[in-house]
Image (cartoon, rainbow, N blue to C red):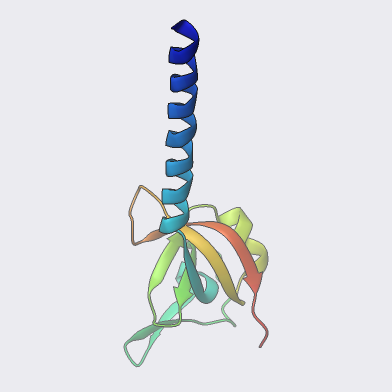
Length: 112
């Protein structure tokens, strides 16, 4: 009896972890945009864009997507080597602010 209870508990834990991993994958999204310093974000025709010639370093590291949405990056050290470059990244919204912050999981520069 004790052995079956232990086996059932182990299977329950395994199932729970698999469901948790699957829900994390479903929250991941692909985002294409430019890694930018928030001080260098400028509106162009009412759409936020990154001024890639800006050298100001006083702001936060953000990603400006192709639609002009500006999202703060929760793990900026991963993004800083790609500053002022167009990237494609897999990210998950953080718990802090679901739509304003991203935690980058994968990141690669896009040509051009």
